[in-house]
Figure 1 (tube, rainbow, N blue to C red):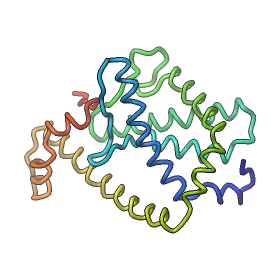
Figure 2: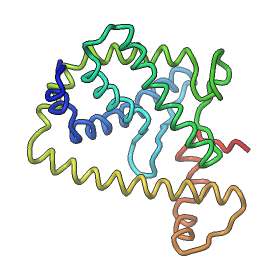
Figure 3: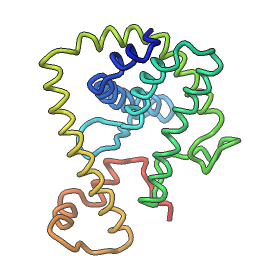
Length: 217
């Protein structure tokens, strides 16, 4: 465990966080797919980007847990639990609020759980995120070992290439979501870019791609 500031900086680097983000995003799609299969007897792919099998909430969560474990790993276990729980619920809350107030949409709800806030977070899931953080800390040496083998020229070039790809993916995804919202509100395309989006990423495509996303009104 890296406890001093120099050690933390050495461990928590952009390439490491980026690859953890990618790993977490792909794992999130698999985990939610398996959960949905056992709950509803069929597979659903819960992605959050136009291109690629990425559920970025899990990506941000995994990278955040990694950084938090290195920064707070020497603290009392109860304090660590609170930090990890706050981190997990914080990511959910921020993403949920962005969906609600930027797109007037929701992709999940905990409204049927007691002690929930706006249906976006709840005590049950907050406790689960805290426990997940503690479990992840036990696995931290394995992740450090894996990431140490991903620190060479090839992986660094890959990090740059995939970073550019993800940046473009985010921009295109954001534009498609905004246009989806405008179509829902009955707005016609106002330029060639919006016309292109309407042709290639129409509302039917978006509904099939983002199966859990719903407009609030």
